[in-house]
Length: 156
Image (tube, rainbow, N blue to C red):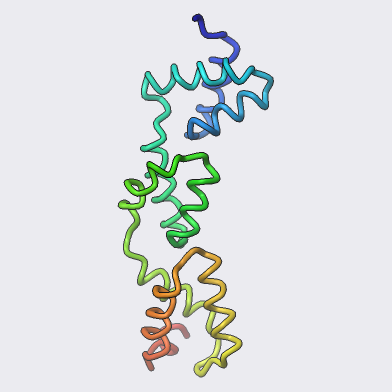
């Protein structure tokens, strides 16, 4: 089966801007008027050429969001949102770096007073939860940050 030239050209224009997952590519092509069959055929062709690779793309997503200070849970949501299959998540998440320093920095930035009250601590920990960090990571960070007396002098 010959691939429609218009669908190939559209796919290549999409990929000129940024990498995308297979699902994102097929969704964008169908949104631009290509049939689902043509979109899938073009995606197959590009996969065979190695231009799109969901495993490579998943690793890129993990590194990108980890560098922005997001936790594993949020990164898993992003992998899902980008259409990466769950079978690729585990391997991609092996690239997730240690985040202790990041969590500590984010917590320090949220705590404004030398002796924060419960409401301020809750607000700060809720923000970390929304960023995708686990309770165990957040509690460990609270122990490190609130147990340290020199933290406030560092942040001033």
